[in-house]
Image (cartoon, rainbow, N blue to C red; front, side):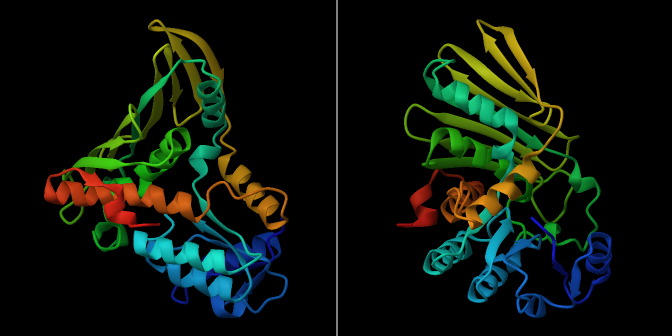
Length: 307
């Protein structure tokens, strides 16, 4: 892969100029002008959630492949529209940047679970939190529940949701509490239960109020597999004792997902986290927000319809 062009929002172009100079790429003052560049085959979008749909559709219409950071969009409605636009753009690839499932500990855990190393899968426990609420300026877009609904889930928990979907398939039902501890405008503490096909149930705590805490525990009838320390250590536990540990000290997930995008563009493999995966991860977030608001269980079909 080669970085050939960079653009940023008109109000703050200096970062794009700096990146272009550092990597020998061309700077463009707008995405419109960047998309006219024949050298550009694919666009990596690291932009606010609310503009993902508009920019993705613009890139696809210009004949460019799209890598869009998670979440796929700010709403499931937009995510579905993006997926359908990508499906209609024959020969073009859209990939969503759910890099956590590319963590090597996660792939290792998936192999163990698939091979039956921990027996029948029963569910998972997850923690996806950091103390970002302490650092958010009052005017930050993440403070706005309309622009970042279910804030910790939208920004952090959605990583865990996608990994759980990788293990367990399609989420079915969600129940959640959302609270405010430090922020006045947006939720910063969430606790959710996600039901998959029986008997699998996942619990997820995602907060913007505690020091960085990211781990996932896959539960089976014969043991558990834990991904600790931001998925840098994989631990197999049987009969209540650690029986095997594997360290993955270097996080290569972002690099791995970008190379996977490049291989998909070249037709060498299918996209692992495409529109459907992005939509169903986001659907759990929307279902969680609705559940907390209305104090009830929410069926995923209420969110995604017949998608």
